Image (tube, rainbow, N blue to C red; front, side, top):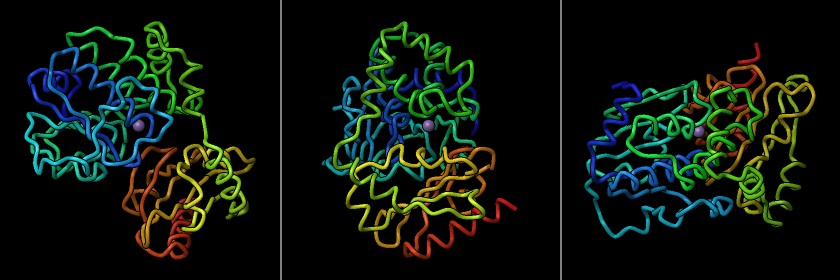
Length: 316
Ligand SMILES: [Mn+2]
């Protein structure tokens, strides 16, 4: 059932044992919104646990109390009962083992236009919000707490990373107003930016190999990076790689195909104007108009053919 933000706030207020989660392959918005909500719920004297079923990239370790995020694999409990499971920044299909581990009604808070709220009790969706962190920022107005420096740090990290440091089309006046309030609460934008953009030397060398794979299609309107199994071993994080080809003159759609496992490939897409969420949805994925993704369960070479063809159709 779709609900309004006031009702989402009420659900949080009436629960006492809350589990918060976000998507696998977590980015700044997934981690920032989860941790910010943890700090908010602590302020409200709730019992809260945060589960993310994946490795937390080292760039986020500066966020306050990030060590409290639990990895479901390491839990000894077979089942966890809670009053509420809050799923942030995704539908329930990308939260991994947390879905079966936690038995509780689900409150889903998201800004992905493709989220249809399947299998959740309540969905608050605001596709106008630049980031789930912007929604959490708005939510505070309906909760009996004040913005703390810890909350502000987490929210700013998500706002900054989901907007490409306030560069992408999703950056709105409300996004910058929220950022301004977060800076007033103690955030140092340069400190967050330096930490988020930091790369290990190994990842930098991996990036050099990845950039050599660039190929152009459809008269240069489409650029792709191809991280096959051998190259995938060279990089821990591919964060930001796609942005490097997105800026090439004439490129309308940039994409990156990454081998995650045998017959499991991940596609990320960015565009200037084409609605890439439609391409992603046609292949079982989702996302935003200008940034979307999907998985393709075939060999890497077959996946390459499939994605190039699907993108070609959208250009017609
Ligand atoms: Mn997001």
